[in-house]
Each structure stands twice: as structure tokens, then as C-alpha cells.
Image 1 (tube, rainbow, N blue to C red):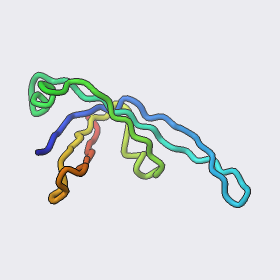
Image 2: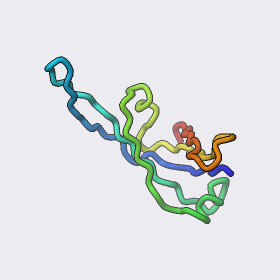
Image 3: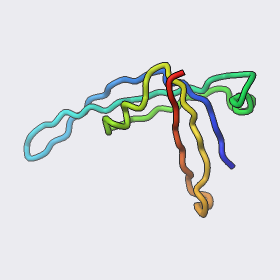
Image 4: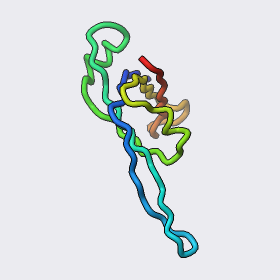
Length: 100
């Protein structure tokens, strides 16, 4: 079974942390992305809303190219399903989106 939810990026913020290498302190930037489900009574998102109309997804992203994919106010689809042959192990979540 797979699940598809329409989500809105509600926040993109920066988090900074330190690491140490060869006696030097290095500052790293991590983006924190928050997505919340969109409630709709019409259209393809209606079925998701009947069962689970609330929630939040928070991602901490260290790769700048990946973080740039998320823009505040933009809508995304979160697709969740099991990998073939994975049994009860966690599946895969895919996020896709664009300006809307």
C-alpha cells in the first residue's frame, strides 16, 4: 500500500553546529525544513484528509543542493510506500513538488 499526502513547506531555517578536525573548529550550516499537510475536501488530496488531516514533517538537511529544493509556501507531494521485498522493514518516502 502507498500513501500520498499534499504538504506545504511552512518553514526553511538554518541551524549551525560545530565539528572539530585537526584541532580546528569548523562551523557547518544545516537547513531545517518543516512541511504540514494541506486539508482539502475536493480533489485527489481528499482521501488523505479523511484519514489524517494533521501532522508535521521536519527534515534536517546537510547537503545544500538538496536543501535548495525546498521553498517556503511551496506545495509538495509526500509519497510513502514499502520497498518490494522489504517485508515489515521501513519503506521509502519520496517528496516531489513545484511552485503552486
